[in-house]
Image (cartoon, one colour):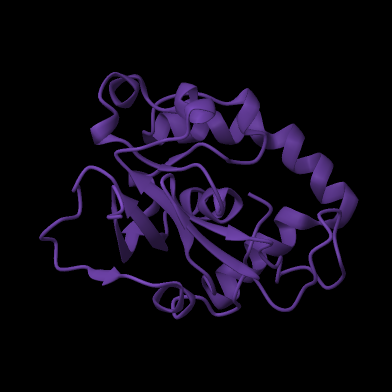
Amino acid sequence: MARPFKIYYAVLPSSQITNCVAPGYRHVTGENTPAGIAERLRVQNPYIKNLNQKNQFYIKLEESVLKDGFVNPILIQAGYCLLIYKKYLPEEHRKDISKALCCDRNGGSRLWVAQKHNLDIPCIISDFSEMFKNKGLEELYTDDDIRGKYGVNPKRIIINGHGVHVGQPVHIHLENENKWGHGTNKNTVSPT
């Protein structure tokens, strides 16, 4: 059976992506504009502060990304968003989901760092709306194609009707196991 989407790899400006799984995302909404991103950062501070007090999660992640770049891509959807996260999309995208470009799976913390510093970020894109058709991007077809984009591979790659997912990503910027029970190595996979 043919998939209802194509899978692409691209490095994109982080400002173009709505972060539906940002730190403390349940408390954050707003447009994906510089002002909207600034407001989200302000609201997220208590959540980030709390996790930093536990294990310096965001401090270490930000230091790692700024020093070493992004080891692994984030997962984003074009023209699709899981129903539970649609409320976090900008209003124009809620009205016309085909315009949505969102991170609603793995990568919200890395996207948060990228948006904070206005960085481009590597992405595995599940394109449901042909937003990236004929853009000259590398198309990915198999689990091995996707794994080839990771510096440190997740334990599982899942491709289903909702797009690409990864199972048990490694939080490689932490030195010890963290509360999610994932082992660690080097720098940038987040709990989102």
